[in-house]
Amino acid sequence: MDQGEIETAQRQNVMSGLSASAPEFCLDVPRLLQQFEGLGDNCDFGMVQRAVGIEPLGLFRFAGCSAADMRSMLRRCFEPLGEPEDLWLDEVPLRREYWVKSRQYPSFSAHTTRYGGRDDPEVVRLAQIEATRFLKRKLLRDLSPARRLFVHRGEADISTIREIAAQLQTYCDNRLLWVQPSDAAHLPGSVECTSDGLLLGFVSHVGVYEQDRVPCLPVDEWISVCVKAYRLWRKAEPPMAPLKDLISRNVAAQRCRWSAPPTAASRLLDGPAPGGGAMIEHQLRKSGPTLVYQIHVPVGLSGTYAFSVWILVPEGFRGRRIVASIAEASIISRWNADPKRRGRWQRIWVVANVPAEARSVSCVLTSEGEVGDVFYSASWCLERRNGPLGYGFAF
Picture 1 (cartoon, rainbow, N blue to C red):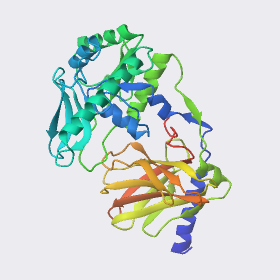
Picture 2: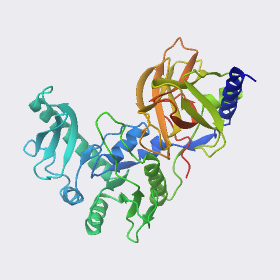
Picture 3: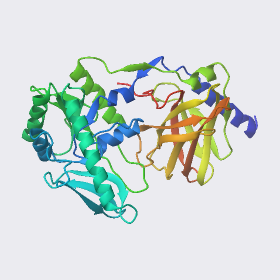
Picture 4: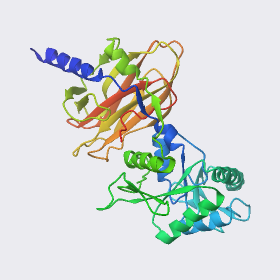
């Protein structure tokens, strides 16, 4: 068998591995995380919500606030936060973003995504007053019927956290989930319930945010915490949803076409993978941006599609990007791989609009790295919906 025949056989093996049937139902991660709302002290939980494809409105979603100030806000029904005399703007280097801050609650600091030298500061301040008032009213409404499980992530003394939990109870039968760094006695992704009903969750590390880099977040651990906290809170299993994976359906029916360029080699491996099925090794044969693998899937209908795939980056990987795309569609949103998160599976995805004339789409995996770089993929999934479900998350 010559080299071309060997590579053809390897590609056929990869396709046969992708034909493993996806489950009929999976965890509805977007719906699950919509049941939670952050109360400080940083943006980690808000970014986790973004990592699963949802963008809920929240007063503290992209804001910092200490536990002590949160306790005071709850006591005072968040007054006078949002009043003109309370809010002011601080231009923060290096990007010169305006952050909105509070005089009454000094630790409160929220992103505006508006910048010095580009946006009028007074226009920004007035807009933030209106936005803060609106989000404060929304939060007070959500506190009254106990619609959310509230999350505080950050260092604090237990007495302050218990006071926050007690203050939440004055509005309605609300519960608090306090997320802290894991340690030898508390594994990442675990949750405990104290005798007074406080939920304690644990993740391996705080989010790392660097300019022009994908945030480094333990998303899988956060989802594990939310699943377990939901069970304790609601005394029920987390929401599930039917999974309609067009890739596994069409591969099984032999209606897909693969395309593996000479710029990368892909082969099927035996090994555990999220969601079961195949684990695929990809080795780059060129430096720079590289098309690694793609599958052409018939769709028949235009509309919004979500393509997701799980990625494992091993030690020694020198690459800078691993990205999922839908080639024939206009991108709405996406979540790329964190190439510095080594040895743990992470899910990447893209949501895009497929044009009316399209009869098939190409689910594409690309990377930017060096010759010889290796990484792994699994659980390729294409859904006709506006965000990926939870295929591959199992607890």
